[in-house]
Length: 298
Image (cartoon, rainbow, N blue to C red):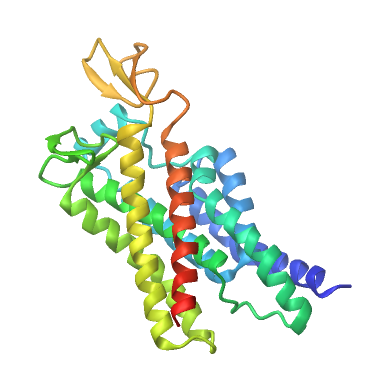
């Protein structure tokens, strides 16, 4: 049996072992919809664990922290949630949009970096540094940053400003709306994901301290930038609708009042989920470029 097949079998076994208990917590707290969200989430979590246990920890940290924030409901937040297509219980599409970019870069990491490494050195070492695994971390940092920006920004005492025109105020929950409090929260969300990368990096004995610091700073900046790119796309290309009955903007084609909304701007096919995926891919690509430049300098 080849070393790659052996690794996949062992990683699959431990992936199931570590993810199985989490399902009970997720089901009990109703963090994912049944059965679609649960099945999709469990499948992706196992695949991410096979790619890298550290990346799995980052994904788990993102999911738990963002879910806790999303579950903290207030009367004002419930109104905003009903106006826009935001929900604290994630379905299969939302789970996929928040994990597919990391899965994509992670699979590339396996194929082009990890598998060739273990074939050559006959070891299961998971401490392999690569621009591709770095990009996977960056996509998760982007999603966490975006979620923290949204959840904390909604609770800001001040109205958000439109990211494409900072002189213009928009209703809370509007895609493209940013606040100082939310932006700082987004930076914090990116920092939290970087903590997992730090643990992986310091365990990789071939990396010097200056390289680690540079990579972590880059990861934080790219993750935060990805969250802002998400807001920019939300303000420019995401489909936005208008309910003439309630005279309110919304992301829903069917408003909470039960009336069909009128298409207002953006592109009909560009939903919040598409924006989540595309912004994470952009941050992932920027992470690869930045990582390669840092590697060249050091």
